[in-house]
Image 1 (cartoon, rainbow, N blue to C red):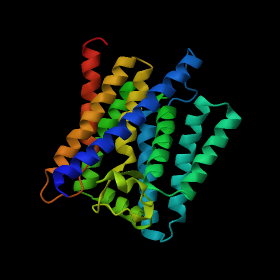
Image 2 (spheres, one colour):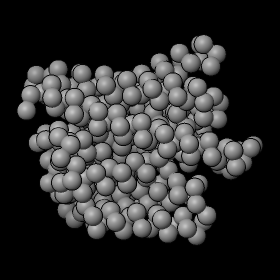
Image 3 (tube, rainbow, N blue to C red):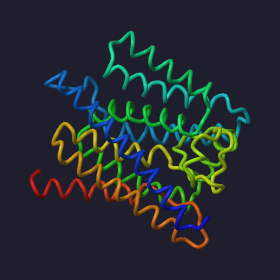
Length: 277
């Protein structure tokens, strides 16, 4: 298949998941704010706390990858993280007892029905839940600074220290795909997850590349719906720009996905902000 066709298929698949995630985030955040007119987080998340936890989790995963050959601890971490997000999201839309039942059912089906399209959907639900829980607990400026700092970190981690590439490959080698799977053809969406090999009919989009701009969108829902929508639109444009850059590479090699996505997310926000929307 020609590179042009591959990029178009992956492009529209990625755009679909971005729009789905942002839609869930905006609707869920709005639901919380409508239910609780004066929403005040019990424990606001600080910039330094967020960055510290991010670095600690990254360091822990890298150490475990070098020391532990089993996939069990990584599978457990992924399952817990996604379950927490799905549960939080379900709790917004359902009564508490039903919410945990829905979350448990979604995770059970994830283990029984290991197909790419379902894995992606569960990842989106989990990401959306985590994003809303964090996004409504931090100011928009903190979310913006986090995106900028982690964009520079992404560049260093991919091009210089390369530990992000090492971590990604180590997890995939153990069958742990903590990412969205974007196939080169729609029919591959029904393939088993175990068949996924990055670079062979599939592209992986890290969860952070979707979650970080989504956090920015969630924080802006409290300020201005228009700013949230413009930021979401900017992120979608950033993803399209990422694809243009990636598929223009000869030869193609891993590249940091967050910088173009974060840059366009911020530009989208600034356009809405400067026009007073």
